Image 1: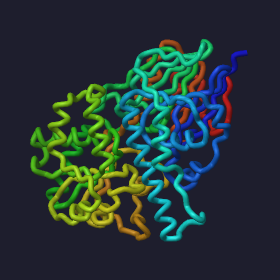
Image 2 (image 1 turned 45 degrees about the vertical axis):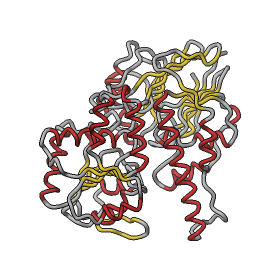
Image 3 (image 1 turned 90 degrees about the vertical axis):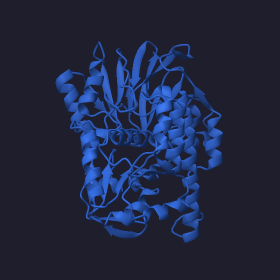
Image 4 (image 1 turned 180 degrees about the vertical axis):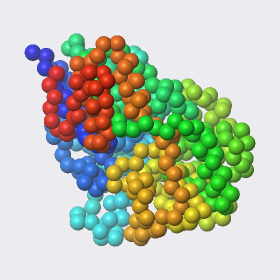
Length: 455
């Protein structure tokens, strides 16, 4: 009997740590291999053994290069995975960048813990090292989109762009005559720099993200809102701080800011500072693979010329204390670390300044605290009062909202037998489950970590 079993090792009932295992009579396939991020109880799961013998996994398929989808790869390889890791070219280059940065941070955190003696481990060790990350790259195997790839006698797969970030794909796995779609993270229908998500039209089963399953993004004009808050802040002689993910969001921001300047809607001489070496490197990769965007390479180079890119941490303090109004784009996107914290420490307590939140903020992060109107933020052991304007701009989200997720499902010509929701917080998943079942009459299951589903 050709039994197929699906089991989520991560990314079930949460938006992080995506790892979805497909056990078949011929191959055991892991779709995505991400780190848990956010609150401590989630991050601690990165140190726990997977509920499977890693040697049993034959293949990894990577939908895109965000850390919550690729960040566990070095540890998987370190612990015995020997197979190929399939992805497209942009995802390969971005994954290398992100994994090396992750490994560097892991090593630095362990060193700090040992030096300051704030660890219960003696000594503290990194989850994985730079050498571990580099060793995993030897197993990267690139594929072309929209091309059927034979994995075994009865299993084949195909990648299709889904618009979330450059290189992001949904994946179709045809396995013993059953068609299973893994959505990956689905992007927006209207992005400033990426084509809209492509889509499959046939599926027996769908494993689908649900990040914004309970809400609609603000459809009012994003350019108008950015223009308003930037000009108001400049008028008040303040700074605009935009915590941003290095891959995707930052590049879309500099493109939009370039357009606003060209249209004389914000001051042309207003400095735009990108304070993140990883964001700078990710931007270089986007330029290299400009054909995956809706902007040509020459235009990208022109846009980047107008951005002050700071790679050296030693320059950050000077920028922080510069009294000229400016736009700061810095990581991390959820304010869990990175150089944005230096700007927040200096600017969050001044009502002249504005913090623009442009991406999803996980539970337990500083970004979620700001959205929840927290009166203070704890940064590096000290509390800072929140007096700056805190504005959420959902129009810059890289994730489809509920209506766009529903439209993506409607592209299927025949209703699938079942949809399984992953990559969402419980409230978002429950809202989307009810919406799909009510409007489309398709059975929906919310996957539970380590619980098997048999096809």
